[in-house]
Image 1: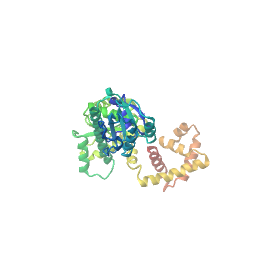
Image 2: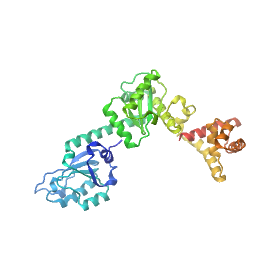
Image 3: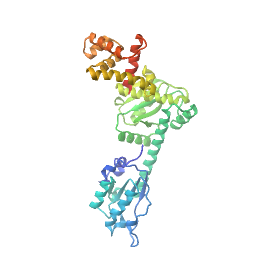
Image 4: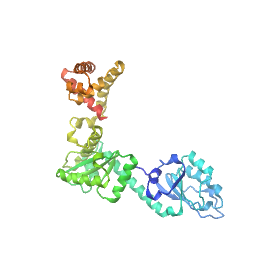
Length: 380
């Protein structure tokens, strides 16, 4: 995660900062903080601001050097835009408002400019705060990259162990991982995670807008107590979250399996609207999830889905809907007809039509093929 102008606008130290121009640029990334605050001298020409500002820097200034030459402000802004800085925060000592030409230029180039009073913050404190936030954001990005590596299949056992110990240095065997989807927007998600890391030392990491943590396998009460600690610390309501647990593992070089298991289970829980589920409860989806984006799986399923959906479009029929309900009801035609509110003979007719459309090597393969295609379709 990168720190942005929009992020700092929601943070307490910047509550009284007033955004004057460049609203469309609040998504700009902040990578550092620079100061533009030359004391005014007769020899200094503010039109010649040196190229001393870093790309993606939030620039702080009291603009003291413009005291007697405020008309040079537009030149300063143009140079900051040219240097590709992130924005400008002005302590309103000299200027109480921005000139119209500056506002128009900043809006045109989506360059955010803030005004804040002398009582709203010292430069030193602002720099310290933002620098700390940037460091934390860099840490989150680093850990997200490590988790992303675990989702791949090309790591050696030693690499897996190294990542596991970096993320969870106190992890004991046996263990299980939990993935928690808090159903928050991205900004709220990272805000909670940052606060959590500041007040607690229990390792919790982010990946694809979910929280990932490790739990002692022990008894169900032991890991549930630990899980509850995490939930409470993040100020989340357990009932409003979707949680996926991995199976229990007793080897550190299986950590990437545990990670993927909890992630698949969490995704499944969200799609099925289940509060929580363990990977070994996914049934056939335990096999389908890891391969749902595989070329051969996609090719196989896409061909059959395309055939069914094309038939429905051409004949204004409901074969796809019937196939989904049929598979969800384990090939029970009575329950399928009840769910669809049609006669069972209608279901039999539609199933026979599906059998005509789906190429099978043998009559007994039909349901297995249809089930794989539909279950894979529901996972994506």
